[in-house]
Each structure stands twice: as structure tokens, then as C-alpha cells.
Length: 320
Image (cartoon, rainbow, N blue to C red; front, side):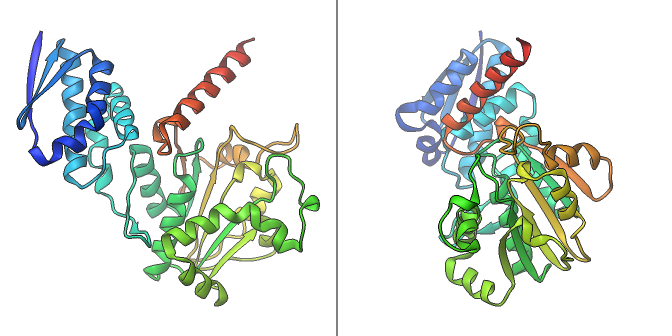
């Protein structure tokens, strides 16, 4: 039996421990340790390696709480997973990286090591592929980086695009003119713009032609200079569409391509342009391929469990 003692400021205790000590119970269950609060001292007891892991997770939580972060179940799950992979020291300073402020005054920062590497790649490279499951922040972080670059005059305009193919839907059955038909597909991009930039700022810049939200088909034949371009839902591009998009890139531009290769809505037998491009372009300087995983999911913890369940199901099905 081994014991370790950690000092925590009294005002941070409730944030770290959570309601009815639910955060601490999660750590205790993960490592089969006992954690006792004695004033400003936290006493951890159990087997040697388990105590070390629990201590690492608690110290990381202290750093998060000191930075003003409200500790959520996702934080606990993520830190436990990183401790298991011995990545905790690398992941510890992730949330020190500030991207921008939202309109409601919330600071946008990467929440996981995978997100931090994704953000660093966007800063460094001209073309970045962000590939991963739902809830990993691929699109939202790309949008935040685009808006930040625009505000800092690093680019003259923002262009946001998506292929208009979703879950077997057919545009012809939707009411309205072409713009009204494609708007529902682009809604997640509008939502992110409104939250980070504000509806008024977005509309003003859109009227000036400085921000454009359009279906991928509108990109054909154009050369996009001094622009930050985000291609979302890229798993639903064909190889031809992906090549067309990538060859639109002009001087002073940056492109971020996001997608989830487990949710391809293309007709059966049709290859995804995202899958093909990530296999072809991985060794070219100036291009990064960032693969986010279920560890990087920052939505409701249930989303992570759903993704894990589907992964296990697919693996089991592929073995049959």
C-alpha cells in the first residue's frame, strides 16, 4: 500500500471534486485507489502505479481548475485516457493555447492533445486535413482559426463550403430556389459563424463579399487568393470534387478540409475524395493530415460511448 499527498487550494476543491464527489469517484474506480480530502490536503492511497496515475490525473485537474476551467466529465475521461497512454505530461499545457473569444465572452482553446496538434498544423501548414469522428471539434476549431486569421488581416476573406450530399437526401425534393435548397446543409457553418463572430458582423462582412458560405459546386472554375477556405463534410466529396477543390488554392490562401470517414453518404461503390486525398497527399510539405480519435470528443460523454460502441460493432462485423 502506497500513499501520496497533494495540496489543493480550498477554493478549487468543489470544482475538482464535482457534485457529490463524482469526479473523484471516477478516478477512484479507474485506478482502484482511495482519495480522501483533509482540508487543503488530498490523500491518495492504493497500489504504487495506480497511486501514481491517480496523482497525475489530479495534478492535471488542479492545473485546469487554476486556469478557470469548469471541470466536466469529459475532462476526467480524457485525462484518465491520456494517463493510460503516458501522454499526460504532453497534454498538461494544452489549454494554455488561446485561439479567440466567442461573442458571449467564452475563451476558445483546444481541449485535448489531438485538438492542440490540429490547431498547430493549421497555423503552420497551407493545407490541413482534419479527420475524425463527430464531436471532436474539427469544423468548429477550423472556423475559429479562419475568423481569427480574418480579424488579424492575415487573409482578405473567409470561404466556407460543403458538398450538398447528406444522408441520402436529394436537393430536388427540397422547396425553394437553389440557395434555399442548400442552406440547410450549410446551417452548421452559419451556427459557428454566429457564435464566434456574431450575426451582425457576419451579415456585414457577407454583404461586402468578405465571407462566403456556399456549396462546393460553386467553387469550380475559381482561383481563391488570400483566402481562408474551410471544406466541411469532405467525406462526401468524390475524388474529382476533391481534386477540383484543392486546385482552387491561390497565393496567400490556407485550406482546412474536415470530415468523418465513418459517415460517408455517397452512393454505394463511390469512393470518398477525402479517403483518397489523405492517402495520396500525406508526404507533401505544406500539407498536414491530422487524425482525431474518440479521445478528442468534447461533446456530451455519451457521444464518446456511442462512437466506441459503433467502432466495436464495425470491427466485429469485419471479422465475420
